[in-house]
Length: 324
Image (cartoon, rainbow, N blue to C red; front, side, top):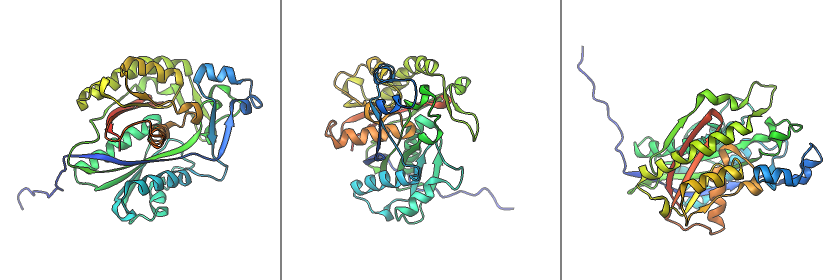
C-alpha cells in the first residue's frame, strides 16, 4: 500500500478581468402598437407598467446558438484574442429549445475554437452573473486561461402570445464577454443567493406550457431584496457606490431598475435602461446592456461597473467589474 498522494494543481493567478463585450439582437422589431393588435393592451399601458417601448423577436429559424455565435464572435474580435486562445465556453440560458446537446459546444465549434471546455448554465435572469463568477474562478485557479461567457435567450418560443402579462415583457437576444487572467483583479467577489420558497413566482410547468409570472410578487421581492445584495457586492469589492461609473441591473422592468438604483445611491453612475428598446432578455440582458453602453461611449474604460442579476429561482447574483 502506498502513502498519501500529493496532487499537482495549476498555479493560481491574482485575478481576472473582462477584455471585451459583444451583443446581438434579432432584426425583427415588435412595438407596443404591434402587440396591441394581438392582445388587449396599448402603448401607454405597457410603458407605465414595465417601461418597454419595443423589443426584438428572433425569426422562427433563428436559434439560441445562432445568436450566441453572433455575440460571442463580436466579443472575441474586440478582445484581441484569437479563437485558439479560448479554452472554456460558458453559455447562460434558460430558454433552450432542447436539453441536449449543450449550446456551448456548438457555439465553440461554429466560432472555430480549438476543443475548449464547454457547458451551459441555467440561473435564468441572473445567469450571466453566475457564469461570469464561474469564469473568474476558472481563470484564477488555473483551470482556464481565457473564457468566453455568453448569455443568450430565445424567450419568445416560451411565450403565450395571448397572455398580456408576459408577452409584453420578454424578448430575444445575446450578450457576451471575454474573461482573461490579470495581474490585478478586475472582477470583484460575487454575492449570490436564492429564495427558493418563491421559485414558483416565475416558472414554466412543462414541455407544452408557457412562461407564467406573478408580476406583483416579483416586483415586491426585487424592489426590497436586491439593493442590499448590490451594496454588499460593492463592499466586498472595496468600491464605494459613489465611485461607480455604471449600474447594470437585469433588465426586468424599468420601475424595478429605477427603484434599485435609487437605493444604491450612486449619483455619478449611468444606469442601464436597455429594457426600453430591448425588452426583458433574461440571462442576456446584462451583457447586452453593458455592451451597448460601451459602444455608445457612455461609460469610461477602466472604471467600476456594478452588475446585478435577479429573477426566476428566485436566484440573484451581483459583482463589480472593471469596464474594459
